[in-house]
Length: 489
Image (tube, rainbow, N blue to C red; front, side, top):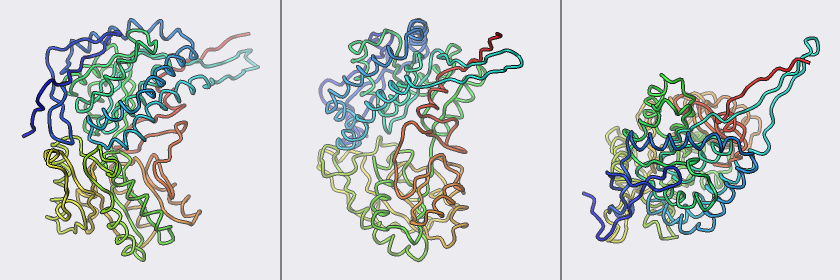
């Protein structure tokens, strides 16, 4: 049983029409590092969503009519205000999500600031198409207009990082938004709302409604006055969103899960490969959709890779998020911890070998953190390609390693899952790198690196990893309607 923290709890409010609005019911939110209740999040439903959508609709005409440069100024002011409070935001993100303060300080909050600045700038540089039809005496050109009220639903693993990744392009294009962060990690979204008015954002341009997917999320995606939905989360939830949106023909951007492979050829730089693959497997407790989940290693270097990889995984320290010596903090919730642990239990049951981590090494945390949701980096071998360990998204610090013999074989095995988000290829052979990258069914392929992102370029997955792409031009296209105009001379 989780414990309740003595004393006053942090109580969040919805942000609607530029004002904070209280809610009659709430959801308990836990500090993952201790298991204590420390926050109460609004349990919003249809009434709150209706109020937020109406505020967004009212604000839309004026916001859409402002120039991209005017909108960019407001967004840059918001970015400045968040950056000035970087440490405060980082500590709040760590306490709410379980990640280390170091990770929040160096990744989550700086990227949130960058998202706002990037889309504020990119919105100033988009161009449209033009063509001449001389025989007909016509000139054709396109214009792009904001769509209206955007529903933005963000996940719990990178809370402010992924919320701003949605809000920034939506409002840069002239839309207004109703956002719903995860009920597990709502605090930094609420903190950002406290800065909206100071940044000069007009009331109703950004509205944030807190609550569960079952109530607030469902009311939002099924609202007839919300023409587009951007969602990051599970494939199962995306199916429900698609069903609820279908009667209204809503535009959808769905960034979903992954079962991402890394392919290590014998000519790889093993030192660099092992160091990067440990990071790609276990960063943020493995709670990143782009994390490596399956590592295929050419048989001739498999024993050496495994030895080095297990040793490096044991050096990836797990513990109290505030300790800068720790690489990982706690998983987001007790329920998620038990889900991830169940995969390790399955490994034992299926006769696979667990080399380090859960059930093998001892986890040590201070007594006051004994109720936290911690799990050591865990390396598994011997799982079959058909095992749930190799097929399903675990979304935690568990990675499976397997040998392969032929290039053609490993491509088939890497593609042999229902997901297709990201992949990594390790080889010094330039021709092989290009050849394999082309054949992998993944929206992003990194070679000899991981998580190097140019925000101008498309981001998204194939198969069950999503629908649509996000990025500079792609996000602009999603959040605008294109119109062709023909002028007769």
